[in-house]
Amino acid sequence: MRLLVVDDEPRLAEGLKRGLEAEGFAVDVAHTGTDGLWLAREQQYAAILLDIMLPGMNGYVVCRTLRDEENWTPVLMLTAKDGEWDQVEGLDTGADDYLTKPFSFAVLLARLRALIRRGAAARPAKLTVGDLTLDPAARLVHRGDSPIDLTSREFAVLEFLMRRANDVVSKAEIIEGVWDFAFEGDPNIVEVYIGHLRSKVDRPFGRESIRTVRGAGYRIGLESE
Image 1 (cartoon, rainbow, N blue to C red):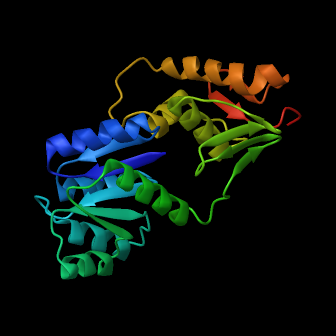
Image 2 (image 1 turned 60 degrees about the vertical axis):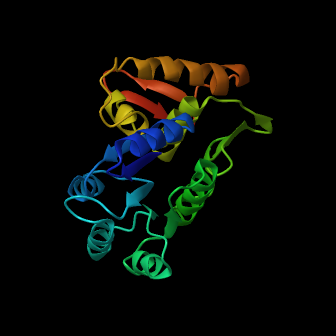
């Protein structure tokens, strides 16, 4: 799942990016309110971590603008301003939650996951393809009653495929949805992770749910389709 971090403190933004990527998220970073608003308009995010004191356009304006445009991506405001009226203003402009700096990364992660669960209410709580089940909130995967242990990146690739079940998705779409926004590595890394997934979720169970569509990409679906 892709997140947007908008913060003008490079060290903090990079730390958040590394930490969240270690948890399996793809993370884009903007250092100004203007750039953050542009990215939020151009990309689909599971959530936005938004600082208030930003150059170009402050977080209140960014959040209010998104809500005025009916962009309901969950927003977690991050700020050094801890006055109660600062919190009131942040929530009144459309933010979903508010966290004061300095904060615990564990607390931020818990609040972020709670926001994503609430913000994705229209989506099923669990993703299923045949007897393959993925629970995004609990970070669990099962084939029937058998649990499957995946790395954070494997989990992210499988979740991306299952959210697009029965659709053909290209390598470029998978990289954009799972890896860093500015990824410049070998796109064949997708093939490596597809291979890992097949060896864990398909072959041990005699399945072929993840298929290659020659010249187009990959598709996950029922084998009989």
